[in-house]
Length: 470
Image (cartoon, rainbow, N blue to C red):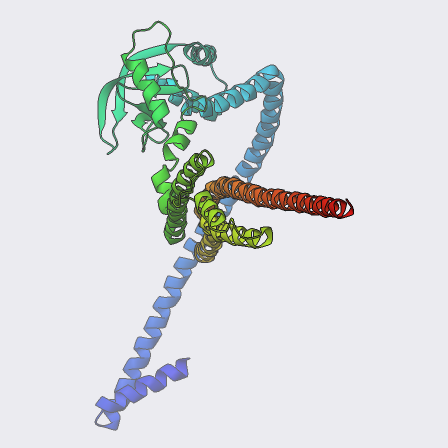
């Protein structure tokens, strides 16, 4: 180390020394300075060593004291742990049934909080919910006053559920604005104001009107209840605390159901209207024909404005023909009249068959659309699936509604036409029977005349023979 230092000094001296003497003097001077610095360092290091030794001794003393204190604290900690365990055991023994009571109180208050949150009585007594909710979440034993208050709130719910009460409270309108109104509460079931039913908003705990009006029957009864002064009045109340009223108000009307059917629904409706028009026309035609046929039955003169009259005319035109020819003529006339009476029946039959098939087509297309929605949005929302299936089934219902009256009308018109055809066939058979009877009488008369002529001729011959003999 000293050699390295000397070399460094020599290098530095060489930069400034101009002669060898100066260099020698400089080296000596630097060596003296180096020895002086080393001496100072040794003295300083000796002084620092004693100080560091003193500091080390003090630190070791503090460490020993800290270890002793830690040992003392550890013993105290263990002793305190034993005391805490003993105190906890003593506390559990002291609580005994109070712990079970605490659990029952929390359970009862939690269940009751869920009940009064949906109860319309809370609109009149809103402070109950916060008290019962806090009691259900508390971690310490309730006081005697709180237990008595819980009993009072439960008893109040039972008592108020049997009362009809009128009071003022804050009501939300359809746009969400709050205003103070007078409402009437029917037990724990329904709230009404002067014009409509109210339901409880679960978030704000304030009453609000239904999103859609209730059915007409319920509305009429409600209006009568408001305006009538009778001692006993009818009133629709919802035992489900508003849920049934919401379902009723959301029930689609007939026009909405019809619109849900879409294009297929409109086609089914067109089929029904067309079938009813055809049925009405045929009913009028058959009714007129029936009246004319009944009038013709009481008239011997043939009237060409009805089927039976035209058959009578054929009979009168061919009375001189023999029975076989007349039968063929009348049968031909009956066959011409049958299509006129049965006209439109096959159309109604086809329409009655098409309507449910169109409904099935609408259901299939609706289900396809529903499954496409499920593919896009998944099955997380049951309302989406139920709504789509419901709309898909509307066309099936519409098809059946259209087919049932068409089938019934077809059956009625068909039976009415058959009854008229039976009259034509019966009268035709009667006319043929009259013709056959007339021919039989004519033949009998002809046979009788022939026999009389033969007898007369025989008698004449006998007389002539007798005269000749005489």
